[in-house]
Image (cartoon, rainbow, N blue to C red; front, side, top):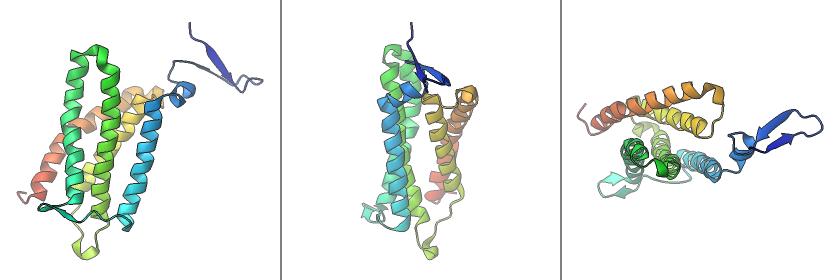
Length: 189
């Protein structure tokens, strides 16, 4: 039986159950706090990269560091997302660990992609890139992250089916757009 906690005890305005996906259990979830920290660090580092506090334009091999960061993030998302869906069905007892890796790993990948995007936006006007597919791709990845967080921590649970549909749609479209973006960046399109 679930124990209940009554918030605002004298007024009894809201009752939340321990173990449900209410605010109390969400605040006790270490994955929730890891996600919050990663999102805040992503915002800080992306802003710092955009305004020039952090320089990611140095070359590593024949490509700039910001491109390596973006590619690393994209490879993780592109590889682990289908792997996650396969592994959670193959090893259902490990689903919780796999989900944690999916959430934290994709948030870290989003951080790397955000640094790449912020670096591109922060370039001087004479060297400003064509953002065509890049801005679409970044918007899609951002929607994937937001809907993933909303699903994982059941925020706005009355819209859970809509979040899932949007999350899956963006993840599927991601593969097509990233292919076009890479081919365009390499000069094939």
